[in-house]
Image 1 (cartoon, rainbow, N blue to C red):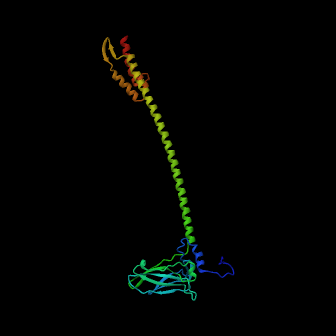
Image 2 (tube, rainbow, N blue to C red):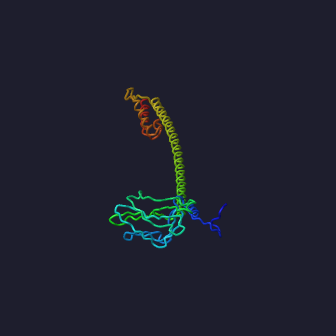
Image 3 (cartoon, rainbow, N blue to C red):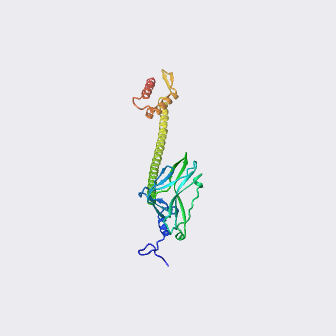
Length: 294
């Protein structure tokens, strides 16, 4: 048989089933606890002498809803050096009263040593037998005869906001990843273009070097030809009246050709560039030789 629960005219309401429904709305379903924002004083706590006052508000513990209609004052036995919890304790089965939830104080030498009762309040048996769950909602310390370090532990019921924040962060991270990938792709393309340009530049340099080498060989050959032509045409000896006046040093002529070669004036080295220094010198030598021959 299937029993209807949340239907009109049906009185099969079960608090454990309702708690299961509330629990399903929490991200961490093992901790379906929290207070509702914007309602009452949101369980705000203050210290009044040696008491802790919990303000109004609404909250759930393991999917069970509770409301603080008026501020609750909790006396604390001061024991310097000890710490404690303000605990919201729920009990599932109180058929003769409404004492299903109350605030209690527990203290010890450390928070870890405080024993908490936390039974399964979602089970079907919670409808017919008492199941207890204790949730710390504040922690505090005691020092110098006073309550100190009062800290709120219970969180707001804000799973929708949490999910939205997670989704927004995931979207932002995904977009950042896309931007990073696009930047990396652009960088890679730029690097590829630079590499291609470098290869082209290297090939151009190689061609230029090969051309320069060829030109150098050509110039060198031209200089050698000029040297041979000078020696062949003019000779190396200078006579006057049959008397040897000067022996032209072939090395001198070679040096003149080399100077012309390194000055990038290979044609000068041949001796035929009009107006050049070598042209004038060679013509002067040729003139003197011609005069001797006549």
